[in-house]
Image (cartoon, rainbow, N blue to C red; front, side):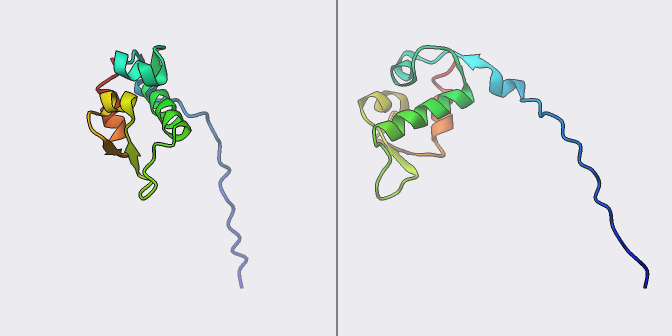
Length: 97
């Protein structure tokens, strides 16, 4: 029997370079600024701030946590009473410039 010992390649880790599109700061519209603030933010940060607002105000549908119920501020951003979490990023994009 031969000794078939395999050696693992040493993995060299390099810091990932973030995509510039994700880091671009954009100014929120007046309707969105009422929810997340008027400070220019990256799209990813806008989504995070929106989720913070949704959770703080208990706006997830209790029957289906994937759906977000709009209060008066979010109704101006969403344009409808209930949206899915998958629609959130697309709707926010319309309010960032």
